[in-house]
Length: 305
Length: 304
Image (cartoon, rainbow over the protein chains, first blue to last red):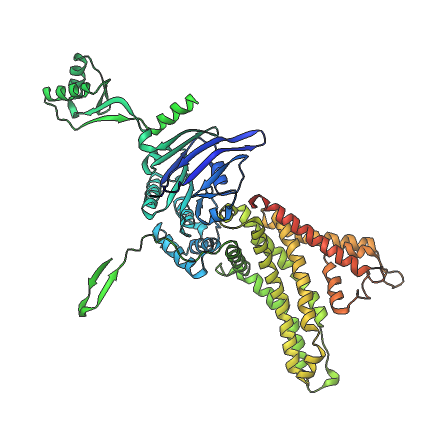
């Protein structure tokens, strides 16, 4: 069985602007899927996107996107990519339909197909009713959707999304993340740059963390969400009784908000907690190991590097 | 897909189209460049834009066609009085009317270049299979196409109209056969020149009004400087001066005369300057080359 082509293969990629090093020796192989590129502002995310699009050359190292060497054939790479920048980038005096169909033609699609696909994709992103309105009259959320539409219209293998939820209200952010999550079911890989780790945790199955131009961690999202050695127990109103009982048994337990958090050092202590709840005849709504968040992973790794 | 049984036994179908991957034909750089060329033409002509955007190009087309229609009208009215027949314009002179398109250049060139930079659309364009040179070629091609069309169509009206009102249509065509190549050749020379200069100035700034004013100012200043350096006629005699070449607004007209007359117009202050025609061609090429260099240089960052 042939090995699937990785989405990205970066080998010792360094990018310098004068004396400033934007990316420093990135070496990583990322499988197909939804990948979050996480980093603080100025971490090198946008530089990475420019390198992937072939709009900038690495100072050293090589990059492959979907198995294609970017340095050797940037045009072929771009014909298979969709790109949604963070900033406003749409012609404001043209209708969404015109904008999206024009960008489909610029991706090499025949004119008639471009118009048909523009209609379909605007429908998909929820702009079917507004397709003939000038983009300048759109709200921030609608503009983000139009930007996503132009990235998808050519049927790309991979879309690069640069801060897709930036500037959106909570509802708009939810809708955008739902759209991004759906892209995986369409067979489109996603590389989503963001500094909002919650967004990545929600929709991405792989994570690349960059800080100061260095790759600090890369891998499946799940594997990064380590168990923290803290047990979360929800027993409703009986949490104070449970805390007291657990402390009598030598465990460190604290009531936090509506739950009880218990520090455990071995699996046997989980049984002690369960038995204590049973002895107190408390209702057990939840008993789970708390996972660390991506924020904690990022902060810990950033400190270590 | 779900099916619906309607009264009368007619079956309908409801499709959830969702997302459909595209696996049809996909052009490369050439298709992308042509797509941008078409989009630029549409923008310049106001197609798929509010009606206000259509006014300028089509009013201008109407205005530059008026002399041809008047000339043909005179020919028609005087068709039975050969001795009264006169013409208000020649084919060579009519090419000069194209220089009136300078206003159009100052309006359109910034409109098809500046918003791409100002609204940061370039980052989307160059994420496509398109290079900086392709971008420049598409914009330049569209600009030349429009200027050529707006200059050539009135000439076609003039030629066809005069042929129809002439005493002998075949004789008229035979007598004026040379304009069939001279007119398009001269118009191409002017269209290329004004397009390159207009686009080069527009590429420097992201503000349309600044670009438009710079284009007009550039040609105005060079023509005034040339007039000052060449000086007035002495005793009614035109003074020859190579400084005429400083007039970059009228420069293409010197090349037009080379096409139509085979030499510099005797009425021109360049007439009498040794190798004046050759110098005019050299200055023309230098201006076009400079403009092209500026244009390509501005979009080199997207070049691989």
